[in-house]
Amino acid sequence: MQATFRLIRAFLIFSLLATGALIVGCDSGGSSMDGGDNGDGSGGNGTTLSAPSGLSGSAGDGTVDLGWDAVSAEDLGGYNVYRSTSSISDISGKSPLNESLLPGTSYTDDGVENGTTYYYVVSAVDTSGNESGSSSEVTASPSDMTAPAAPSGFSGSAGDGTVDLGWDGVSAEDLGGYNVYRSTSSISDISGRSPLNESLLSGTSYTDDGVENGTTYYYVVSAVDTSGNESDPSSEVTASPSGSGGGGSANNLIAFSSEDTGGDAEIYTVRPDGSNLRQVTNSATGISPTWSPDGSRIAFTADGGGDDANDPIATIRPDGSDLSPVTDPADVEDGRIADVAPEWSPSGDRIAFSRDPDTTARDTTEPRIYTVDPDGSDLRQVAEDKAIGFNPTWSPDGSRIAFSTPADPSVIFTIRPDGSDLRQVTDRSDIDGNSGDLAPAWSPDGSRIAFQSDRDGGSSFDIYTVDPDGSDLKQVTTAGDRDDRVDDISPAWSPDGSRIVFGSNRDGSAVPDIYTIRPDGSELERITNNDRLDFGPAWSPSQ
Image 1 (cartoon, helix red, strand yellow):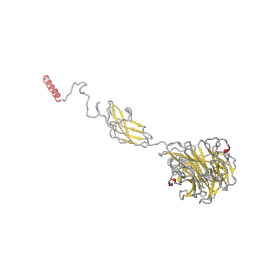
Image 2: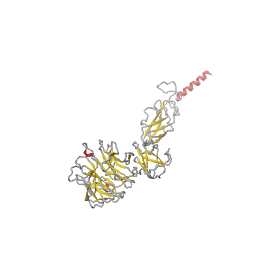
Image 3: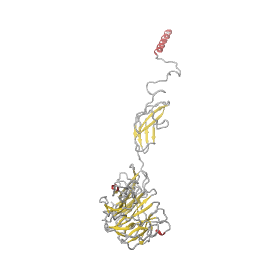
Image 4: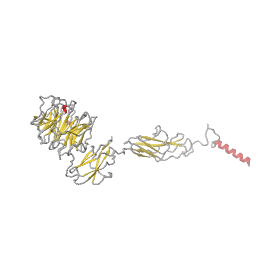
């Protein structure tokens, strides 16, 4: 039997060897018993790993968080993550985001930009460097989710049927504007509430004229960025309007231009005591403000959009809302045009301003006086051959316009709005001085015209007043008597005519601030004090 068994065993082994079904005794130069493809796609050093499944992505603010299911393999080395701004069909030749294999099943990509859509896949890699195919693809679009800081310095002042609000500007490159909220009870949360303003406020002040006297109102303000993220509310203020006074939306405010060191000017308002300084415009150019007779709007010269662009007249509410264009200098065929020094008529139905239609130079020698309706219609030139000048100002009854001529030196004339009855007010024929009599401003009672002049023979400007017929000339300020160069410029009257507001660098400042003084030269008061160039003040009308 044993001999027979050995014979059968030898035959079977020979048969297996002959058919190649049995492989024996190989060293490293041949095949191995534990090498090769096991047929299940998961074993051995030469096998292919399964691609990760369950890939998901979550976009944040400047980040994308990725996660996936772990791959089950004893020789798993880690994972690679791939990103593109277009669909990823093949990862061969691509470099992963990670510098070394990821041991875990999550990854945060913080090298993305908000507003861009990104495509991601992930792969598995074993310890021998073999990489699986890519996972299914996911997309993610990170976006700005960070709200600005809440405004600070919030304050409120109640008037007769109005509440004036103001706050400090929020410093944020992507600031979109502000929202104001009101309630008759304390405001603990603004979510779900509607702001008072229909559109975002560009300035840092707001006048609420939808209130009732005798009611206490609660207010907060928030900041909103250009992505719509809204800050927490500011600290709360309360205000109780009453008929006993305290100031309306524009009652007892001084508007003026304020220019920074970069040459960008904005319109601000401030109370005559220097309090409640608020920025109105946010356009990088806002000069020569003038109030409407009812105090509801401010007209000014706006930025035309560049060094070669035309600068139009625009109007805006004192709270910085409802910016509206008035003139369109682009209608002029030749040259760069600036419509400057607007002045609202006493009736409120016309705005006078200076324009030169014939030259490319802003500091032209032939500016013309125009008038226009506040909505921009019915543009008229005041006497083509007579009203060559700038800085127009209306008489209180609207019957005449005073202006400065561009002659060297300048003098002041008055004329009727229809271009008739031109009259000279000041005379420089026997007076030294390089510039002349400039920036006239008619007093509220019509009896005097204030202006700036270097008529004392010095190099500085002082403030003067004169009767409209040229008589009774009086010097108000004496900045020109100093040894250093000091200018008192751009006078304007208070609504009751008891004070004159003007710009000056008289206190040793390199740039002018806003001052007020009585017409007899007494009681000089400084209103602003900063490192900006403050000029061109205009006092709001009485309400």
